[in-house]
Structures are given as C-alpha cells and as structure tokens.
Amino acid sequence: MPRGHRTTSRSILTVLLLGLFAGTASAEPPKQIIFPVIGPVQYTNDFGAPRSGHSHRGNDLMAARKAPVVAVEAGRVDRPSWSSSDCSLILTGRSGTEYWYLHMNNDLTQRDDNRGGCRNGVSFAPDLESGMRVRAGQLIGYVGNSGNAAGGSPHLHFELHPESSGAVSPYKWLRAAPRLLYAAPGSARRVRLALYGNVKEIGTSFGVGVGRIAVSSGWRGIPTITRVSLAYAPGFVVERQTESGAFALAQLTSARAGERVSVWTTWFAPTLATQMAGANVLAASKFRLRGL
Ligand SMILES: [Zn+2]
Image (cartoon, rainbow, N blue to C red):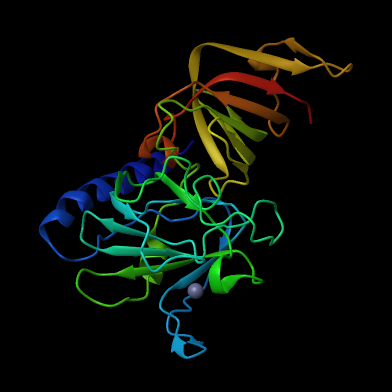
C-alpha cells in the first residue's frame, strides 16, 4: 500500500480530533465532519431547490433503504418533539452545530410498507435513547423514506445548522467528509468484519479489493472504501476451496493476485481509526481463497 494512503488517513483523523477541541471554544461548524451515510450515496447540492411552499433546507443523500446512518461529529442525539410520522433525529455536535436527519426508515421489509413506525431497530439504532451522547461515526439510524418522503426513493435529508442560525447548505462539508468502512455500534464492545473481494497485494500487508462487507453487529452491504490493507494477526489461518467445494488449510504464498478471497479481521474495539481503515489498522485472522 502506498504510504500516501496511510498519511492521508492519519491527517484526516488529526483534523477531526483537532476539530473537536477547536469546536468547544467557537460557534463555527467544524472544518470537517464524518459522512453521515455508510455505503454508496448519490447527491447534489440541492439546498435551496424549490419545494412545495418552501425551499429545500438540506441535501438529499440518495442511498439504499436501511443503509446505516452515523453521527457526523461527537455530541448529543435527540428525537425532536415535532417528529411523529417523519422519523427524525437531531444531533447537537460538540461544536454547537446542529445536524438534522430526516425521513429515516419506517419499513419492515425492503418494500415501502410504512409498517415499522419510528422505532429503535427500524428507524434508529437498537440502543438509541433521546438525549444520549454519541461518538463521531456511531450508528444512530437507517436510511428510509418516512413522513412526506413516503413513496419516493429512500434518502437521508441532511441539514446543517450553525449555532444560533438557520440551515446552510451542508454540501461543502459533505464533499470534504471522509467515508467510513462501517458504522460503529454504540453497544457492541467488539466487532469483527468479513471482507469479500479479491486479492490485490500479498506482502508486508495484505491488500484486498472489497466488493461486499459484513459486520458482526449486523450490517451487510457494499462499502465505499473499496480497498483495504490489513496487517497479519498472529496465528492467522489460510484456507483454500478445493474442487469439492470444501475448504482445506493452505499457505498464503499460494494466493494469486486477482483471485477471490474472503478475509475476516480479528475482533476489535470499534474506533474511528478502524472505521477509516487506513493501512494496517485492521488485522486479518482468517483468509479463504476461492480461486480466480
Ligand atoms: Zn430533502
């Protein structure tokens, strides 16, 4: 893995950490926030676009139904009193900036059934309590189309309100926001990731091109970080799929660039650094090679 990637991840993390401290003393929004949705997202700067009777006060982040939604900075998360059919959350960041998350999921299936209500495990993180403290990158809910977005494509309506003022376009913050590999569950002390993709590099670290990911705390999906370089955990295990379909112990030196591979990380405490997945931050404990 080029050193550049690692350096970039570290500098982003530094900016984020500095932002937390700088934010406590000033009313300005932080220079950098975390991107609020995990997985593929499409959006434009639709702030101010005409809507019936008003102009649009945020950006619409089009994403898969039930895609994880995370806190963009550390702070306190509340369920606003005006929110009933529209499953909404307001995050008050340590910087004093408010972030509004609207139209979160209210469907029980992958269809637009509107049968879930605005509940934990459906709209919001399983452990969410109004008024609770959250870390940057912590899971708070899921993308949907509740309230007046019913019938439309699932999306997160995201607003950014600097302290003591109305909404401004969040676009420049979103454009600069680092994407995370997974959402950190608030309740799980340790998580493990399964990365499914193909072999990119076998060297001092193991590079994998990631097509799909599964997180032990529940989510499976398509990640936005599509290349991860892992360290080797002590005692890591390598298996290769045989012609019968069963897996047999193998040597990592038998791996070929481009072949299909599933990689399991060790169990680890979810932190922002592991969510950003810089080079050698995650460690691989099991490989399953599946051939070209
Ligand atoms: Zn919107």
